[in-house]
Figure: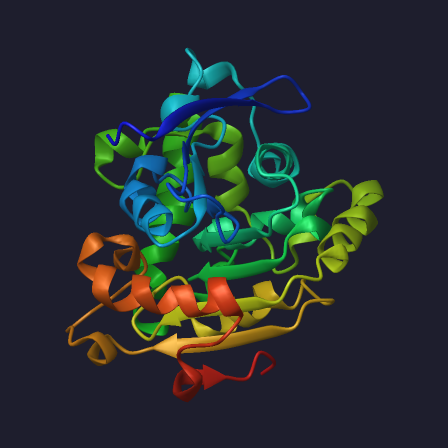
Length: 301
């Protein structure tokens, strides 16, 4: 790992300590701080190469593992009791506060992959975000999965995952070679996600959930790939609808845009995309310019 990279420990409001890394721009003044939010069950280290790229291009960047995952995993994952929503209302909120304190007065940007593009809406301080780039962002409502793969995904994530979680006391994703291990609460919240996110919260909390999403005013560029089995057009639209105060633009990239036969849900953060997708994202992060206007689709169906 680069010598300039700094391991950081970020404490959430409830006392949980997250492990992450701060990737500083080597110059005098950065263009802002980019927080990279991971997908569910994906280690922060998968995004380290992209964070390093951002630091080389004039940004400070922060990567971190959510509670229950990777370097933020507790000693006994069966007893932690973490929920998916806490990744936004506790973890992301704490990281956003840290970013503002670490570089006061600088713009705050978010790059959110999969659930990482939806979590900011749960944070009480998300109004401080200046701009967001989401990649395949959705919240795993199974009828939105790609039509030809829906039954397979339904079986894996909404039948097998809760069954194995009930047996093991956590989801043993690493043993299966699917994802990292997940705390039971997070796995079950995914498995039993309803059409409306707020319906998985107690009734007394639902108004606050909607109000938090509505308080986010940062412009959003939502990117997905035509062969993303999770981040389909209906799934992206469903997630964006919660950010009712944000000006949102959505684009659907084709593999041939980058000379590839496939992209899928995960590959855009692999360093094979350094000279293509990664470089294109800079136009949005620096200047708020959509680099793919020809791939735009309506955010409301």
